[in-house]
Image (cartoon, rainbow, N blue to C red; front, side, top):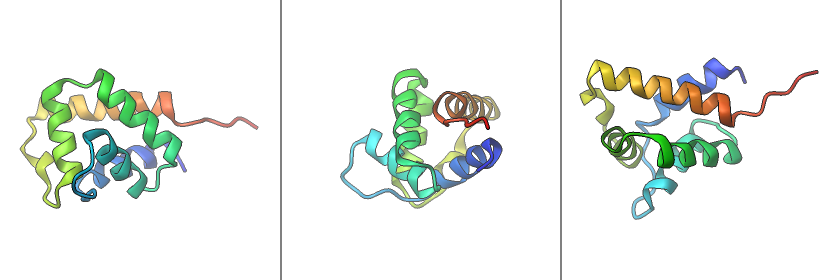
Length: 100
């Protein structure tokens, strides 16, 4: 799967619901896996979000992962850009790239 596809699918999947009662980290992992990301990659992306993402943006991302509504619509343009940059950087760090 192309890196661009993974990033776009990941962003779109954040509107999917995750199972209730899970930790924020687990909700992110579930949303990434629902976007057809490999579990190891999803875990790495969630780890990076836990460690590197600004708390306000992290909370919005988790809310979107846990709810059925598109709560990312309320993000400012700057926050949307920050989220896209984070997803791109995290994908570069987490997605295994195979060379033949």
